[in-house]
Length: 114
Image 1 (cartoon, rainbow, N blue to C red):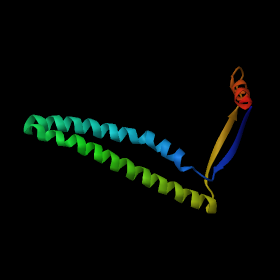
Image 2 (tube, rainbow, N blue to C red):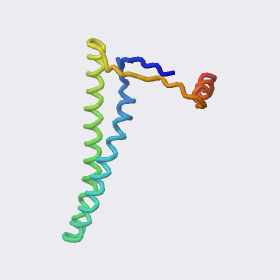
Image 3 (cartoon, rainbow, N blue to C red):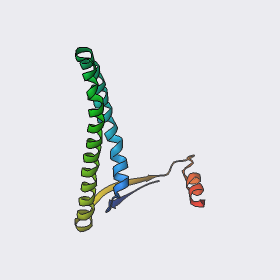
Image 4 (cartoon, rainbow, N blue to C red):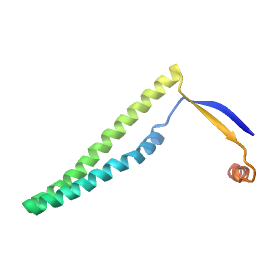
């Protein structure tokens, strides 16, 4: 038996949004880290120890990038919460599917006992 219902998201918490966006933040940081390591090795071969200057600059850049990214995300979350309360939030359609032989009911019973 399938039932569809619509839910409206009226408020987001900043920590949950920052946690979710941090998953997307890992990819650009990893790619830039790989680029900086290869760049530093290349410059070290050409210039000597001066090529290692890129590694501390990378760490400083990551700190600024994460701070800027999280700051903008927190601001967007606050703006969403403000406007979702006044004009309505994001509407999602959720389908409740009952499947034979699933452990969903048993799992929910275990969770409700805690």
